[in-house]
Image (cartoon, rainbow, N blue to C red; front, side, top):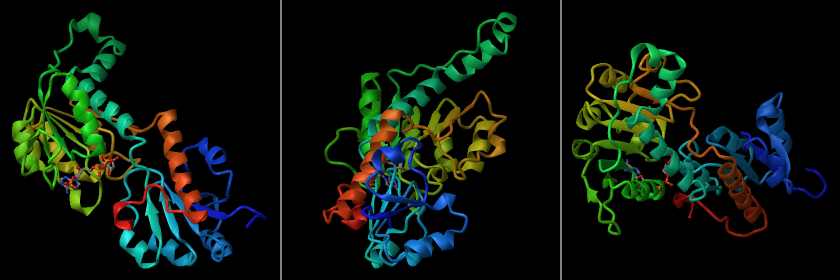
Length: 318
Ligand code: A2R
């Protein structure tokens, strides 16, 4: 420990510029830079009460840090931290909800619009010199006025729905629980929602509860004119089923910002140029929002170290 600064373990970097800006109050120990992870963990075992990560924090790390009292996740999804295991050890878990909601919603709508109106395909068409040779590009699909199915009508899902209502779209959704504060149509499962919807956006959390929730049956339900967008978590969509559904024309188009094995995307996706838009997980990636996420993450750490209740505990830690 440095003289007056508390030790904090950073399992993963915060977003690049932000460590000095938001973590100046602590003595930062960067696990990803350590020559030997075990040596670093042993050195701070008696003094480290707080840890920061972007997604994953293993039980092995928890075991190596017996004084740990908080794991602060920089992001809204925290399926990479076993909260039950943390709670058993008396460790609180926080995430960074709300500060990224509007950003992710903007991006989700942008992907849907880009797919429907063939904006990425259009860029390629001009660059490849196809316009003068082949004439007008194949038409896209109307966006405004369509039916949008939202899988996961939570904070971000609601922000997407608000935007799409402004486009004159009708909103339907599926959650495990029907909301009593909205008038949007509720569907009992993802297939029923897919059958109703023209376009379908996935914004559920990750973890076992949502793994392959969007399978071949849901893709068939969305249909040959339909568009599937995933801005939630990669494993929620069954990749192999998606490749087949797009190849066979059972699903019209898809746009993905998240993947099961990031930063790798399945090679089978690459050949599906005109039917599939691929993005490197950047729905919350603006300077403003990444700074706000980093700040909130460190505000949680600071509150804990000051003896106060962290600002945004995950529900299971409350
Ligand atoms: O199921 P409910 O009633 O708890 O509603 C939540 C829904 N949800 C699900 N819907 C269907 N099947 C499931 N197995 C399932 N699990 C959860 O997803 C809720 O409406 C929504 C999640 O909303 P929030 O908790 O408000 O999260 P937020 O901030 O909108 O972020 C969603 C996800 C993150 O977890 C990251 O993975 C990603 O967006 O960035």
